[in-house]
Amino acid sequence: MMINKRDDLSSQATNLEEIEANGFAAELLMPRTLMMEAIRRQLSFGHSSREEFVTAIAKEFDVSVDAMGFRLMNLGVFSN
Image (cartoon, rainbow, N blue to C red; front, side):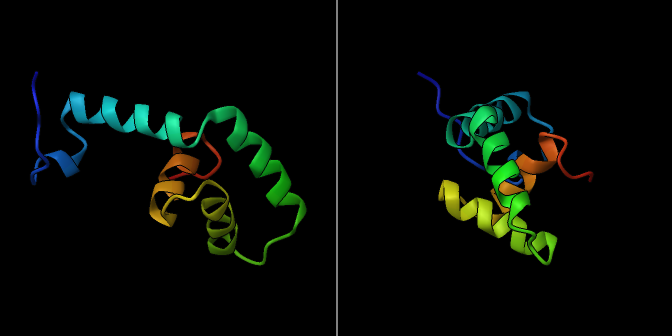
């Protein structure tokens, strides 16, 4: 068994294993199909800001606002 501990390099998104682990975690915690349903539902509420929109979806999935922001960018909802 191999255990990789987080270090300064792991947060730079250059390590392939870290990138794959993050993608797996994102799909596990925020599945694409459920995300698309939540996005449609939240869009219908007419949030006053992007931050309010992201926060509302993050609460639905019980994840951090930062994690949800990255997920929405990776799904193509927001651009970088």
